[in-house]
Length: 238
View 1 (cartoon, rainbow, N blue to C red):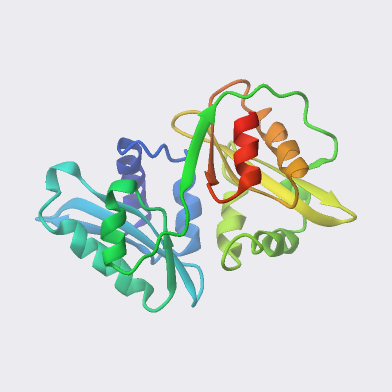
View 2 (view 1 turned 120 degrees about the vertical axis):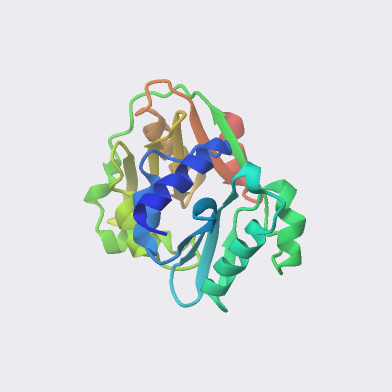
């Protein structure tokens, strides 16, 4: 898949209701430019998949889409198999839509936990002075902190993600060490927060308030893992 083809995949994702960020394509592509595939039928694009290899041990599948008018004809299965072959013997993660979970199990995947998407408008005051623009955090410190919450280090992704046009990244340090960070970015509808990683609930709450202050009352989206009780508390509070 060429870079321009990824823009087409983003359009399809929007049509599926996934509400991608306005500048997501560049960040995803920077992570693994060879991990994006588009399926064609008679020269026409009908399917796509991303199979991003973060390193030799871990990959992630996404953008698995078949155009509605071409579904049920085997195009999706061929596209899926190509992505799986590309990632080889890596451990593979994916966000699976509910109605496809049984098919993912047939391919050897196991449910880890549910991600739940919350949305709404949040009243917030002025961000606390202790929050830093993420650009002021040493990049290697950010990479190391992020790796506590993600299976592998993801330098290329983070470098592109925190520089997305229109996005805002904030961080919290204590005694010179990073203890939390978050990014909010404009999407086709409203704003999405992510990542939002913090060592304590109080730091996560502080970052959430600082991030939503950028939106001027527009709707915000936050995906949380259901197995994280503090994340559930955060979304239920706000």
